[in-house]
Image (tube, rainbow, N blue to C red; front, side):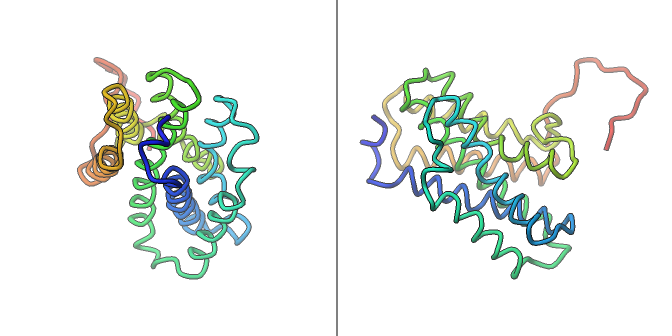
Amino acid sequence: MLHDLFPPGIQHGLDLAGIFVFALAGALLAVRKNFDVFGIAVLALVTALGGGLFRDIVIGATPPAAFGDLGFFVTPLVAAAIVFFLHPEVQRINRAINVCDAAGLGLFCVTGTTKAYEFGLGLTASAALGLATAVGGGVLRDVLVNEVPSLLRDREMYAVPAIIGASLVALFISFDSLNAVTTGVAIVTTFVLRLLAIRYHLRAPLAWNRRSAVAEEP
């Protein structure tokens, strides 16, 4: 089992870290959208727990961790409270959202992949659920604020870094080399790729040889 490769509690700690930073991202977006305190809390919860909830339902880990661990429910509310009182100036919110979202992406693609593998899924399926864990909360968040999910319009490589991170974890597992160091490599790789994509406006390719005169929607 993968738990034997890590000190006790490391999986739980990574989960809580991912939940916290994703909740910050959701709450900051709610501030940008001028949501009230309830909207801030809801968006923080949905962003932080949506992907993990989907993963746990698929692998049959019931009740899902979001309902079985009080820390998983309280952590997003703490993040929402921090944002409510201490959010950065308006012109800096977008940058804060991007950094938190990239951090959550890296953490969740790793924890999602490892947990799926522990429940008996193959490496490919585990990596796919790692991706779903990483992007699921962001998709729900974008839908709630009436934006096209980043997963569907990968204009700044949202899904690609998560795919690479989850694939790295699966690769390390296949070579029996998943440990604290290689886990960190997968997290940092995903995080850095996402920030580089934002900084240099890297994107996934559009349809091949697209000649439509219709401009892409903003």
